[in-house]
Length: 421
Ligand SMILES: *Cc1c(COP(=O)(O)O)cnc(C)c1O
Image (cartoon, rainbow, N blue to C red):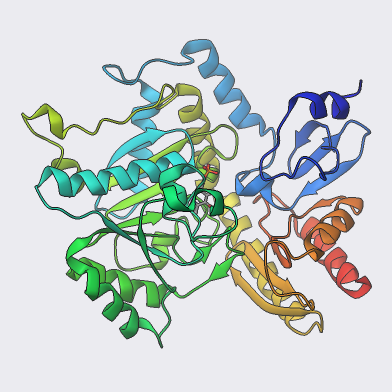
């Protein structure tokens, strides 16, 4: 049996209807923006392998650093013990965040980073004897696939089978200059019961790269602050340069209480999640009463290899060349977005930094299950480009090492595909 057939026998793939799915493509190697399959075909990874790869695949510097760490200390229990990579990473990360972020809690992925954040908020209230258990979130939000993360995500076909089991959340629209007063009024109705507000800043990724204004979010955050609603800023997707700045936080003047990171954290090398918080949150767990402890942890909390990958990736991210690449990609995207806007089969073109999205006009409504998505996916694959439309929403989230020419090659193909469909 070849690899595809063996895969069929034993593997169950994510977000995949296994009955009708095509065979998975065996990838044998990655280098820079390219993925190589077992037949020698290469593909440009235009979606950074589900939005995680920052500096390209198999980056030699990250590989070298992780390899050294692997020979030094691969893992140690993080209760009662610590190590240089975890301390250094926390120090380096906190320096880049809003100055109220003071403590780092490690976990394994974006969903767990969100779970930790939610538990911090609920227990923050509990430890102080406040009965606040309601959570505020945006319609269309996506915060992950574990139960807590699903609960605070918009209700959709993804969450439907679990509907009854998800905890109650107050969902509001994303803020605009028109609806902001109305949103404040809605929040006021529940104000005394709301423990926290969780949101994807500026871009709702999985919902289809829906974008909204920093100014309007600032407005909403100001209102939450004034009404003692804790804020969880989920930067799992937006973190580490995606929005053109290091974090979405750099577009905002208000500061969240808690922040979540994953995806680009290790440059896409290893799974890891981080939840950071203010001293105010942290201090609410300090007590002689042992019951006020945050009872949460994962076997691989602050795994030294993942911490080292993150340290190496952040070094690369901060160097001049990468910062220039991020600006160049943002500018190239901006120019191409103006071309797309003129195209008769395109609507709702939007761009924030290195993220460019648009909708393919179809007779069906815009949705994840719009059938055009699969056809577009196949067409781009045959042209050597991995794009993964969310239904009829198409987007580009390339690794930062993509060159001007490679990006132009993708744009050229996009226009050809649009014309031919
Ligand atoms: C992907 C994502 C998550 C979940 O991260 P996983 O590592 O896939 O569990 C959470 N929040 C946002 C905003 C995301 O984009």
